[in-house]
Image (tube, rainbow, N blue to C red; front, side):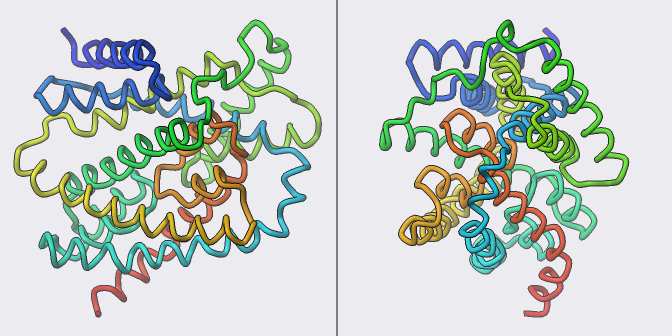
Length: 339
């Protein structure tokens, strides 16, 4: 059986298992954990990068559609929470770099870009250019995203009682055809336009910005259909799990173990920041936890949409985090090497 077909079947079984057991986020966590288990036992898997990129445009449109004039009423307090994101990145890096360097013996480039909570593709690119171990970086960041994205839904579902199985949008048949066509065009034009100017995260941010403009101008009033958002969860979920395909015992013992330890440490740091923001009354609990969680931008956007949080607020914080990492990483890397 072709590896991609195997991957899709295992992902489908993951969705079905989560639905039968009434577990949260079946369309995201089912494929993610199903492919993780299959990879660990040696099943040949294959991702679908092109399809996953297209699915990210759906998320960009979905988040952009949530941006309304009401968001600007929160800017007074958001200025303070957004300003905390660079501080959070510095704290995480200050703990993560020596953790990887001294406890696991990674070289400078691998340790530094493993410790930076940026986007997976950006950190792999920077790390490779600096001479780091790309496979180790991939496994460490995949482990970070996997743990955060798996843990948070269970916290929301079983601690805060959030309904994470509720529909994330209107059914396909309920969305006006004209608005659906406009959203498709916004996704494609926003993605390709952002890609043409070299914007990082073009597949999400281009559609997000263009759709936000359409939402603010009153041209669209709906999110993408629920079926489209479920498909986005499905493809993004198994993309994370497939990162573990072909993993060796040494990689599991060193790289994944390092990723687990690092993620647990930075979750504590992130929780402290989120708790401070909640205590100050700057953000509600759900938005604060999601905004300061060190997960992937796309995955956090999905959890925000499903949890009923303000996805625009959450994505804004992750955008600041990733921009700071991308712009500051070369300078901070040189500083860390000298230290």
